[in-house]
Amino acid sequence: MEIEFIEEKENKLFNRKEIKFYVDYDGEATPKVLDIKSKLVALLNTKKELIVVDNVQPHYGEPKALGYAKVYDTVDDLTYIETEHVIAKNAEPEEEPEEDAEAEE
Image (cartoon, rainbow, N blue to C red; front, side):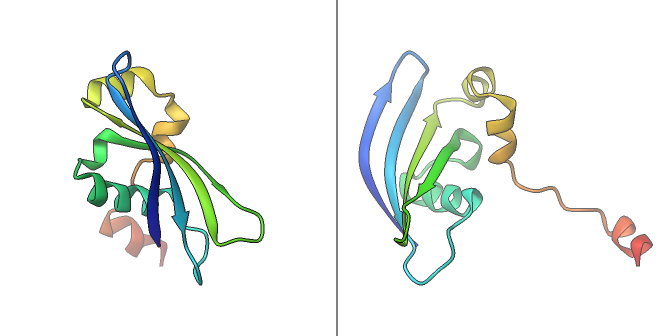
């Protein structure tokens, strides 16, 4: 998976940086939001809790998608501005405790 930045804009009103990008995933399945978020964290040298991948729109018939992400200055800004479903979409899945996994078997 390769990420190519198209546009990077500073939004001082919301204390964030807005980024539009292409994701090229030739020979792979469409990447999940969390996979793209991890790659952006590495490329932008920021923390996972400060970045939100807003949307990823795959191109029909091509292994390419257009994405939009926002990098906030603080966690407080992110939680104040972003809606709950966007935050939930970008949250890491919680792992089940060992006891519950054994009880189900």
